Amino acid sequence: MIRLKNIRTVFLLIALSLTTIQGVATAQQHDQSEIRSEIVPGKQAPPADPGQRNFGGMLPATGTPRPARRPMTPRPEPKIETVALEQISMSDPYIFPDEKSHTYYLTGTGGRLYKSKDLKMWTGPYSIIDLSGTWMDGLFVAAAEIHRIGDKYYYAGTWSDHNHLIEYVPLRYNVPRNQTQLLVADSPEGPYKPLVAEHEFCLGPENWDIIDGTLYEENGTAYMVFVHEWTQLIDGTMDYIPLSKDLTRRTAEPTTMFRASAAPWSKEMNSIGEATFGLKMPGWVTDGPEMFRTKTGKLGMLWSSWGEHRYAQGISYSTSGSIKGPWVHAMEAFKGDNSGHGMLFTTFEGKRLYIVHHAEGNGPRKPQIWEVDDSGDKLVLGNRYL
Image 1 (cartoon, rainbow, N blue to C red):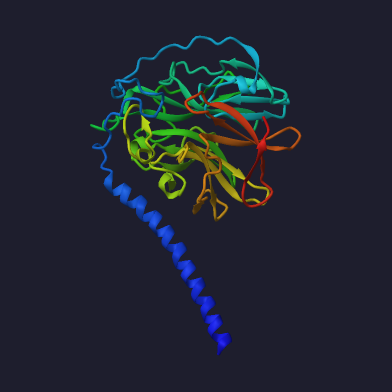
Image 2 (image 1 turned 30 degrees about the vertical axis):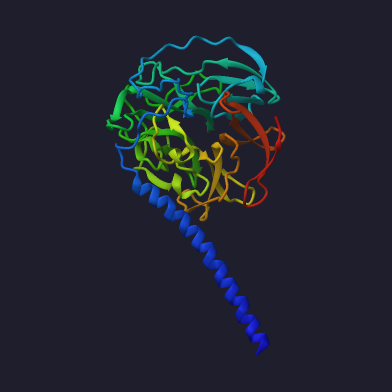
């Protein structure tokens, strides 16, 4: 009888523990739902407070007006020089190791190209794209990437046209045309030209605010995985579209993978005092998807949002091993110290590394390279490499 009572006590304690854990998870979900229910599209984006933390730059003391249509300003050609990695300022860094030339290529937001033989010293920035005859000509490019497929090199980048609004939202944010497009070249150094040369062509739905698209292949099908912006949705999403064999069109409409608020570490912007474009715009951010597999075959996605310490890098994993998910989210950020939009690459010596941008306070974003361990089912952050 005593032994039976002890066993019953143990089971009771286990049941209580599970109930507590479930209750915590349910409470977190309930809290997110309560916040979402309080957010009414079009009615809750007042101007930021003077001096408030603001993505896109600090506000002047008198505040800042709502985003206006911006003129297209030609960018001057940069001076080519060789510098150390820590001297480069760049958001959303992406390294493409080219086996053919045994050269590392670095690009990112701004679209310029640097090249290196040792990851330490980089020569650039080079202008490598030609957008003549398209709506993107003369516009700023963000989150640029380089991929090799067959004997061609593909450049994925996001272009924003603030003179073309896809959605007018009073009292919140007028949504400009943002699209991730694909360019192609015979060399990693370009020149990259649009894969589809039609002036108004968009790879994604034209009425969607799309950024940060990346390429991913699974079972012979190429996909573009991208962000459907929180500035349009409030709760940003990750989505994918399957592409034709020649990558010139989508073969189906987008599928949503998950929402930003599904990740426990992703914080609602107003709750952490973060303004956006000079507005107290509520919502949850999705940014920078990058697909990877661990050595055990586990499919993961690096992606970014805003957390306790501003910008943050997180990871989600597919329980099925497929892009179709379902996707589960780590409880804590992978790197939550105002770092994010990272990706993995392999050196010519076979070492797996992770490049990410990081900013100290309100300083510029700079690339950092870190060691990672991908030998198990979960990616583990190691020591700073460069």
